[in-house]
Image 1 (cartoon, rainbow, N blue to C red):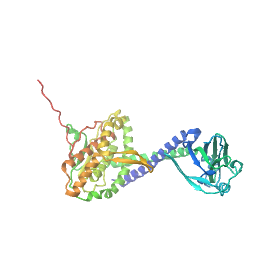
Image 2: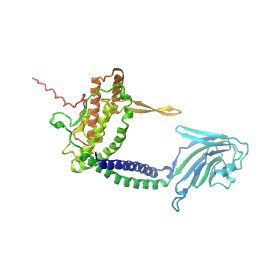
Image 3: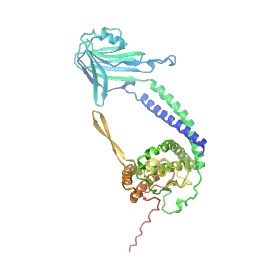
Image 4: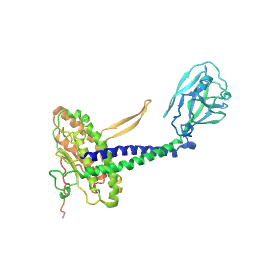
Length: 466
C-alpha cells in the first residue's frame, strides 16, 4: 500500500468521523430546538414534594459568563428557567423565588430548612438533606432581594433569565409557616440550541465535504494498486451453482493456549479495521450512487472494498470468529497465501433498482437468521433500586468457538466437524455482507455450506413418474 494513499484515507476517515459526529449533534440539537414542549420549555413531570421545615431550597446554581463572549451576548441569551408550583393543601398559598446564594443564606440563617440534593424521576425519588435551625423566618414576599418570585393561591409560575452569579431556588409557604406540601414542575428554555445546531451543521458539512473525497481518493488509489494473486483461481462463475462470493478458511492447527491472548495480539488490526470500516461504508454509499446512475460498481472502489472484507475475514479467522490459525494476519488488502481468503467476482453490470432495496428490505430475512447465528442478542429487564439490568445471549457462532477453544485447551485439537460448521456460518455472513454492500445482485442462498472451501449447490433430484 502506498503511503500517500494511506495518509489520504486516514485523514479522510478522521475528518468524516468528526463530521458525522457533528452532524448527529446538529440533528439532536435541531430536534431539541423544534420539539421543546410547554411553550418552548423542557419540563420535568409534576411531582409532590414534602418537608416539615419552613423552606425547601435547591443546591447552589453556578452561572459564569465567559469574558470572551461576543459583545451583546449574555447569560440571558443562553436560556431561562421555569418553576411551576401548586400548594397541595387547600387554603395554602405557595411562594416560589430565586435569589443570590448569599442573600438566601442570610435570610434563612438559623432557620430549619431542607435542601434538595438528589432527584430521580423514574421512579420518582427525591433526596433531602436536613439543615437544622430554630429561628422563624419573615414572610418571603416581604423580602426585596429576590431576582424573580411568584406568590399566591393556586398554581404559580416563576420565570427567570440566566444571570451571572451563584443562585438558589426557594420554595416556601407564603406565610413562612413550616410544613410544605407542594406539587412542582421545573423547566428550562435554551434558545442557544438553535445556534449550536447551526454551527454543528456548518462544521459537519465542511468536514464531510473535505473528508469524503479524501477517503474516495485514498480508496481508489489503494484499489487500483491491488495486484492479482500469483495463482488466480478460475472465475467462480465458471463453476455452475457456485455463488460468486468465495470464503476460504483452511484449518491450520492452532496451539492449545494462544487463543487466550489473541484479543491482545489483534489490537493493532482492530485499530486499522476501525478506519477501514468507516472508509468501506463511505465508499459503499458512493458506489451505490454510481450504480444508480451508471449500473456499474467503480472497479477501484470494488477492489478496495473486497480488500477490506478480505482483511476483516483474515483477522476474524485468526481471532474469535473461527480460531482457525495461529499465523498472524498480514497488514494488507492484497490476496496472500494466508489460510483464510475472501473474494468476490466483479460484476460487469448491476441493477439500478435493486441498489435501493437489497441492502435493507430484501436482506431482512438473512439479517434475522444471522442475528441468531452470528450476532447474539441482549434484553433489558426491570431492575431493583440500583437500576435496570441487561441480559446477553450468546450467538450460535460464539458458543461453537467457545467449545472449540475448550477443546484446544484440553485436547490440543480442533474437532473437524465443528470447524467446518464454524466456517460455514462465517461464509453465510460474508455472502450476505457482500450482497448488502451492493457487490452482487444474486440473492444469497439460504444454506449452510460447511467446510473450508466453497462448493457448488447440489443439483436438484429428478424423479421419473409413470
